[in-house]
Image 1 (spheres, rainbow, N blue to C red):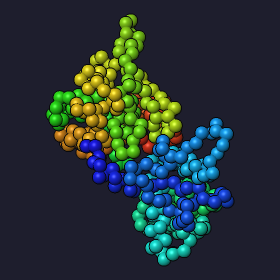
Image 2: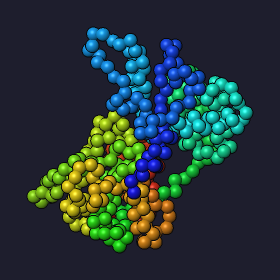
Image 3: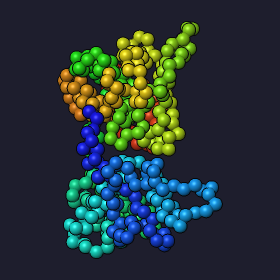
Image 4: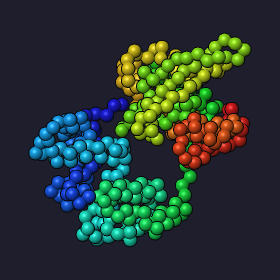
Length: 383
């Protein structure tokens, strides 16, 4: 369900904020303070300087106010706040928290809250390793420290040769196999088939049949299908357009063109779109299921997938319905919302499509797509 006012306030108090410009030496600090740790955010949860009300001035003006330096500083803070996603700010804040904890644990009380040498960063990596942190977590913390060091114009000790080797050793010694099972085509059809039995209404079953089917066939991340905390990449109702494609043997067949304004790997919002053609011989055709949902969906804007009362479907609700269906089917293993994307990549590979084609469909930017392809026996694929 949507977050309460109190929970939003709690998240606002935890949200990080960027530093304000300090002296003219190229370093950064909060005004009047030596401690470089991020300050608490405002009660509305915005990173200070990231809202429309921050100090702006008319650059066409022929005169600049006496306090124009302060205005410029606020604009710098705003731009820095907008330079990364809110979820990234949270990661950077956790990195600083972890480094403070490390310093307290080893009895270091001097030097502020940023590393002062590569050897200190190396000890930080060793500390995290002994605490059982995953290599991916350590890497994200190092990225956070690197950000703050660079913002302050300080040497980026996280790029030291020893530090990188320690991280490599951690990755090699602590390899963790992804336990999430792929939702393959046969499993998807069974899940869609039991939704009328696990959902609270026919409308809800129609909604989640369309959402699950679209997540699979369009290789979508869950945050692109439904809303979640910090999510701003969700498909909008206005981004759906119905088209006709030429059919074999003449005539046409219906298809849907879905626009995605931004994504995890498209933070600047260049946007993309994907075309899904109907499968007339399938009872679980994604185009037919989406059309059936749109026919009964309330005629309002906003996110594509909403409840009958108009509220957006959340990530938690998406996950809850999926797990109910999996439990009803008696399926074993760890299925999660990302299992749709893993399953889509796996089924495409089993059908003979190249890794480059799968990367294009799933909008992967690196070879990490190979970790999504889990090829079991062909009979289990349902393709």
